[in-house]
Length: 281
Image (cartoon, rainbow, N blue to C red; front, side):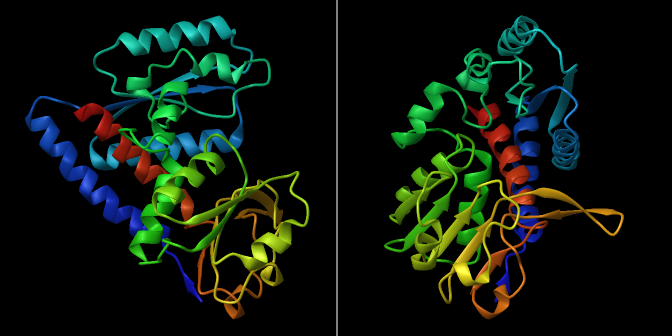
């Protein structure tokens, strides 16, 4: 089994982004990303910090707007409307999940599609499904880039996607269809779930359940992409683990993207690429 090195592939993409940023700056365009963070979710804080550091690494200007967990919805909406009108901001990222009292769908409806860096607005989702989007959602885009880097064929192959979230599962299906894969999407209500994963040649696991799947749940020679990320306390330390238990996988799979070091870095590098694309457009 070969482990897919997301850090390595992400660095290659970041090197290209850095050159694009330098080229745009020579034209007087300074790519800029604004991250809107509401609440004090520990995982969200870590993700945002990594995104800001990655922006600095490639020369993208980044700004963080932090709000308390009890921020009024109207205040968040007014902030988005202001950012929509700011010509110096090219990309806007609303870090999810939002605090429980906020209506995610309503808040995102006030985000300009022209600055929607993770393809969450209704207009951009429609463009994605009609294969006319300027950019693609960060995590699914990163997964496709990683599969292409390792020359893993998708055309005609049976791919199972576990999870139907707006940010990973559903757009993942569309990107796979564009690669001519045959796609099955599974979710929490799917019966006999593991019968589906055992038949698949490629499995993308984004179900949000710690170690839901194990080696015996996959077909011999399958490719498995683990999108899950769980902070687990072990021996007094906090470690990151995924939706797939890694034990015994080396005897079953041909390729596996581990947690950490797999999809995570690819998501961030795709975010940088999308920001540059929005600045260019």
